[in-house]
Amino acid sequence: MKATARAHTNIALVKYWGKRDAQLILPQTDSLSLTLDPFYTDTTVEFDPELTQDQLFIDEKAVPADKMGKVERVMDTIRDWKKQSIFARIHSTNHVPISAGLASSASAFAALAAAGAKASGLNLSRRDLSRLARRGSGSATRSIFGGLVEWHRGQDDQSSYAEPIMEKLDFGLEMIAILVDTSAKKVSSRGGMQLSVETSPFYPAWKEVVKHDMTSMKQAIASHDIPAIGHIAQENTLRMHALTLSADPGFTYFDGDTLRAIHLIDDLQAEGINCYYTMDAGPNVKVLYDRHDRKLILQRLGQVFDPARLVVATAGPGVYYL
Ligand code: 2P0
Image (tube, rainbow, N blue to C red):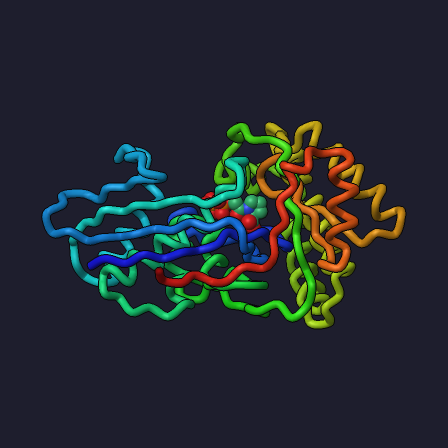
């Protein structure tokens, strides 16, 4: 009746940016990510026949029932699959190095799916756990697995799941997060991607971009080619952010520091240092590189940004039970 799971967040190298089914969270395209070691969520789910509704506590604070829509979708799916109607008490704790906009729905819903399934007595495969996590948040689908992970858009609920490409990395791909901003974002990922699907004239081109990038990214991974991985990820993120700029009304997640980081990394690339940027639905910039260059890149980034706001992330594991 009770289980605790730990799941790590992930950074998409080929981004998910749009749904074709908002209820089931079926995406418009495939996507591909790297699960990250330092950022994770621990979640305990305990079913209790005495409860008349689910109760959620995040970092020990009670969450009001009207803010639990995404959690309810996962919990209702568990009840539906298990054919039982018991409610649960859910405690979730986020672990991020500094509270700086890296807390992610990816780790949260992957941990909830795993803990909830086990506590209910469902014995799900990791593939089915990824389908369950998907109900909460798209990016959570991928956080069930460690290392490099692919989420298949699929044809339907059954076929839209994640699977690992390389769970244990056998080469030195790493990331530094530049924590440029800590404020809450004005446009949610969910709202931003929906507006992009509905109004950006570039959306059909994006779907073709992702098809191409998935193929070339998997080739680059197979040949451990970090410059190629970084380059594809960088172009992919720019094209994703072009969807926000070209929506109606257009918007951007970038701020001044985002552009400062982009220019700095462009300069380092021009010097022959192999580092590349990627950004999610927020202003923080994540830098991809080979671990052998970590010291040099940290030093160069630290000349422009506060070294306390540079966080190194290696590849992280898939979800597990505590
Ligand atoms: C990704 N992002 O692939 C993309 C790239 C942000 C930019 O998935 O609506 O929290 O819950 O499915 O997964 C962030 O959006 O959105 C995201 P929902 P989610 O990682």
